[in-house]
Image 1: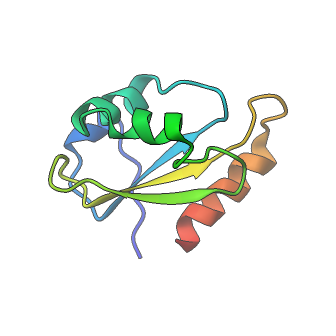
Image 2 (image 1 turned 45 degrees about the vertical axis):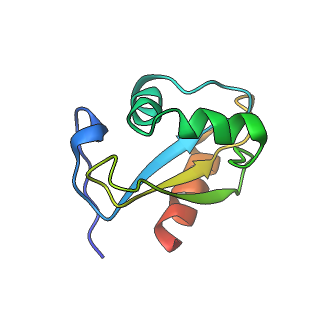
Amino acid sequence: MDFHVHRGSVTGVSTDVLVLFCMEGVPLEGEGAALDVALDGQLARLLQEGDLPARSGAVTPVYTLGKLPAKRLLVVGLGKPEGLDFVRLREAAGRAAKE
């Protein structure tokens, strides 16, 4: 398994899996919003309907269906923004790697 850190827009990255971290109650911004636009609003709809939980520990695969060069997107929940620290971020990154 290879991991790569990419600097710049993720919407043009060709890979098997992209990871997007989300927090509860925080709208998609920056690269998350760009991914949502590329996926025709699918992420925002899934978040709004509760089908894309951002709670701590949640890991949800989202297939891009050719709308992005990446085959799939792995959305990893960070929980509520209050109390977000390195430990919680490290645990979320570990869950993403296991998936």
